[in-house]
Length: 195
Image (tube, rainbow, N blue to C red; front, side, top):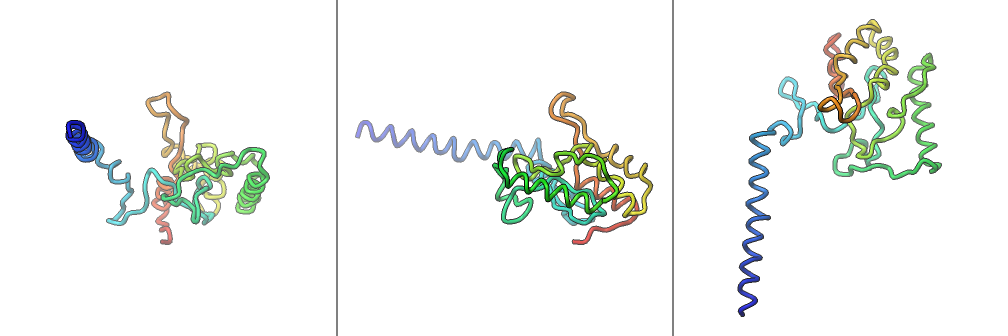
C-alpha cells in the first residue's frame, strides 16, 4: 500500500497536468494570440467559407490557376489523409503520373512550349500544399489571360501582387497562394467560381 498510494497520486496529478491543464493552456494561448490560425485560417467572403489558407484545393477549370497535385486519397486534398505518395524517383508509377500531368497541362495550353515547372506535376510531402512557385503561376498566365480575355500584363501583375516572399526573409522559397490568386482573378472581371 505504501507504493500504490504515491503511484496512484502521481498518476492522477500528471493526468491533470498533461491531460487537462496543459491542453487548456495551449488552447487559450492559441485563441488569444493566434485566433485565425486556431480556427483554420479560413478565407471567408460574403459570409461564405471559400477555403483555407493552409490547405490546397483542386482547380480543374482551365480558366483558373491549377495548384500542386494532391497525393491524398480517396479524393484530392483530403485533410484526413495528409501525406505524400511515397513514390521514389525510380518508380514507374511516379513517371507515369508525371507524364499524365504534363500531358494535361499541354492539352490545356497547346501553344505553351515552356518547360513545365516541377511543382505542377509532383505532389508535396503533405499532399495538401496550397501554394505554387511563382514560376508555376507564370507558366499558366498565358492560358488564363487568353481564356478570361484579360491582358497578359494584368494576369502577371496579379501573380506579382500575390507572391509571398520568404518567411522572415530567409526561410523557404517565394510562393503564390492558388486559392487567393484565383479569387483575385474572379474579382478582376466579375467571374464567380462554380460551387
